[in-house]
Length: 230
Image (cartoon, rainbow, N blue to C red):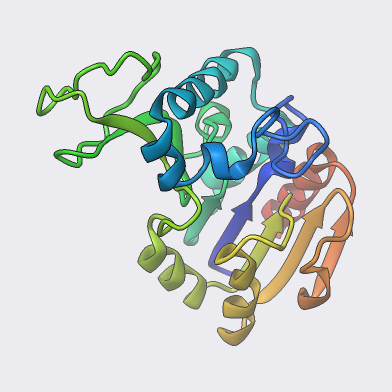
């Protein structure tokens, strides 16, 4: 087994205190998805949307990587073959945990996107108040988040990695958000072994060769130890 692709979702960050998308304390607390996570919402009420993501961005300072993030970073550092971590999460816990071979398919809270010139600068402060873009100096910044109705990032690279992988692992995902929910089917078509790690069975569990259910902070370090032990 040489090449590994790992998909992570909200479940891997939940134990760090990041609210899960569909949980009772979900990411969209107090707001409908249609009001904060679509291009139309931003066009309709940019102040509300900017303030919502400003609060989510500020909240990153209150959370830290957990054992699952750190274990994947150990695997990233030690695995001799190709490895790619694809995350649906917009937090930066994988980076702070030490992962390097990483792609954010749904964007990043700590990055802005200029709707004028297309620049995507790192951004830690607020976007409300219309700060200027560092490149074009125009006040056209929005959160660099892939909203509903927009194309996820890095899809060509993700598809190529899955086509060449020997093992596909899904960690902490609902199995209900596309196109990520199709990744297990792509992996199966490429002949890869498939494994789900999740707190409980997901909508996609029947599609995997095998599944392990429990906290990511326990399951992920155990899997990494197995892989590194050969």
